[in-house]
Image (cartoon, rainbow, N blue to C red):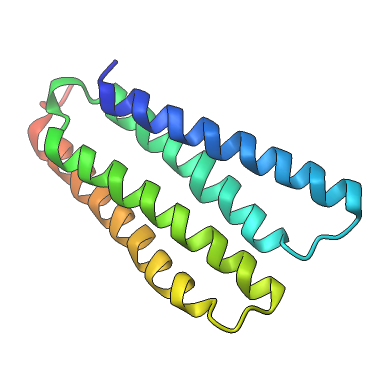
Length: 128
């Protein structure tokens, strides 16, 4: 398995465990104010990053090495900025958009980089 796939799985697992703990905390308090941020942490942080790691593991030698690491970096940093920004919005913080806007753009750049990787693999990989 490529190291980039392991990196994706490592970070996805951290985000997944964090999302589960956060959900348990909200449930215990019966206060779901941060539900949108919690959902994005689980969906983008856990599920999406794990799927990206799976893709890079499956595509073998056709994997675009540099592009996959750029994808990993953008996606991880994007989640780390975007999700706290969503939590800040839910909490009524006045400066939350300073995190949400750049965070969401970085997450989208990560997905665009993933799309570029998929296209690259599609072009490189011989049909079977």
